[in-house]
Length: 300
Image (tube, rainbow, N blue to C red; front, side, top):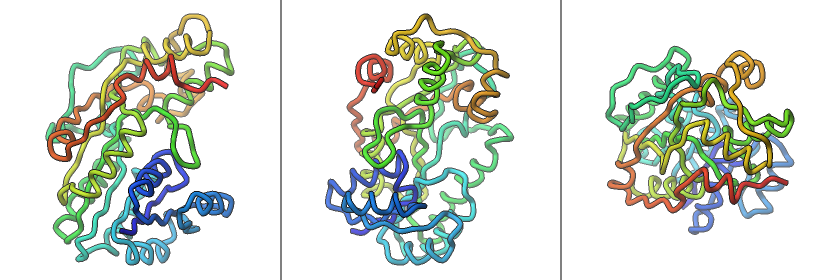
């Protein structure tokens, strides 16, 4: 089976590609640079040079592939529309990578939400996340166009990537800030809670979804939860720094930008992956982001 993966040089896409090739899939991966292409080729993957704005490339690759996985962007409307149009009427799978900040709140680290979302929980997205929610609906509705469209809505992902890019988008920036300043910091009081999952378990779920997920389905991806105060405290311990400290929201915005500071690091995003376990037989093995930070996270 031949699969076309966008974002094949990235953290999620590269890890998913490595897992699929381990299982005997043939993978063609979209990358932006010749250097990335050469490294992909050395790993046994067929590189495709291009970007999400290259409509002709996306249409060609969707036609050649038996399935498409979009791991490059959760928000790129043109790429998603182009790929869905190319797949319409084929019955082929389209696995899209979304993110659980779509249900994030505006806690700014001040409080812990008691709300745990399932795939059927009604919600009103924050204005900054409304476009993502609309895009997710467009993808699910593609089931009516004979596309086996599936959304995996990832929570915080930790662990080392298995492809060209080892770092995820949440914990590494916290580590980098702590190294640079000598102080590990969380936004506000750090009470906000995020669900999380290890990249190896995430890649396994992509494989299961590719094989068995029904058209129009959505799955949250998690295997545990932790507050940001707990996460940043573990980072401080791993780096041998003093106690983790609170950071005013505006200082965090100045460091990481509004989206990351408020939604990636300041919001609550608590979800349940009971559906993935029940319907796809997903059995994640890694249980604790805090244990991983304290015992396995690279510090060199």
